[in-house]
Length: 182
Ligand SMILES: Nc1ncnc2c1ncn2[C@@H]1O[C@H](COP(=O)(O)OP(=O)(O)OP(=O)(O)O)[C@@H](O)[C@H]1O
Ligand SMILES: O=C(O)C1=C[C@@H](O)[C@@H](O)[C@H](O)C1
Ligand SMILES: [Mg+2]
Image 1 (cartoon, rainbow, N blue to C red):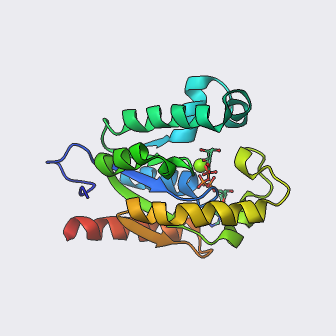
Image 2: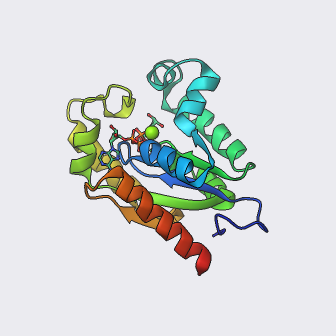
């Protein structure tokens, strides 16, 4: 683990990982504002580079094509520093991505229970993996595979049970400060 504000170690990004709807984008953006860091949303970066929305990438190139694009972005961001990066929900599936996150800085897992994830994502059409007949079952399946991987890669695990976003952001700041004091 790298202390996120270490001046000795250049690789001091902060990564947010977690399931779709965990709050990575929302929390990451607020955290970056408070810490005066540059915020990067990996999904958004992929869309900007490709020029189309993620569901279109899935339609044309399949999940594999999307994952290749995602791995390239994650590898490049790991060479930068001082970023706060909201990752895509499936970033931990590839070992090479997990290694890039560990090497690039401090990883925070936003842990949210499947039922709450379902409530947050059910009206949003921009998550192609959840466009299925039974999205709740799909979320539970994805959670079962991914929760151990998020935990494997994380330096900090924060469980969000429905408190406010700003409360969560302050909790994260405290946890990050504790890591650096240790
Ligand atoms: N702590 C929270 N409390 C209430 N609502 C939240 C919280 N965190 C996120 N949300 C809401 O849940 C929705 C999903 O959040 P967000 O888009 O930040 O998730 P994400 O982890 O970036 O998902 P994805 O992996 O699909 O990009 C948004 O509408 C957001 O406002
Ligand atoms: O959970 C996932 O596998 C995904 C989540 C999104 O953030 C996007 O990265 C994409 O829709 C895939
Ligand atoms: Mg997001």
